[in-house]
Image (tube, rainbow, N blue to C red):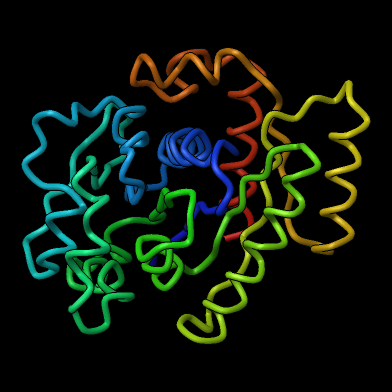
Length: 253
């Protein structure tokens, strides 16, 4: 039985998509059949893994409008890594689905109807940077949520807001939902602030798993080539950090 991990934070620009692409690629390279679900209308996971959004025959948008539609996942350049892509049409889903019963569970229905948890070892959902119907669908479907957090003071306020959302979803919609951990992104060991943010979160969340992703130019460059960091520059510090993240997730699972 596979594991569903939603990568989410209500704050934008914290490295959600970078984490989704690179963690998923390393999970696949370690022999775990992995699926990315791009649930962000910006479609950055789709583009960043090398999929052309201009010629998509099926997207998460079309599946959400008709959850009984036969799913055809796309293969990526990484062996063992597939994706359900998306494009800007997904931004209209919230309005178009307003009259649908149990619209908060549409993504869960897609996963169950296509038996995805028995096909894939890991399903990783890239959530939009807001609390909307798409994020609620992801959290209602997931087993755990992984929280990317930028090492800055305002990130702590964003974490507090997100944890409030997490508790609401857990109590009202998905009682099995748990926190996978926190990924500290853009970490700069030279600054006192980065260390203080890590320490503050550690004291707040207790034993929750934590991972440090350093500031790394190669991580920023890789999506423009449609490649994960493992294929773009496997010797970079960013690559080593995401490989460790994937290994730790496998060990925890």
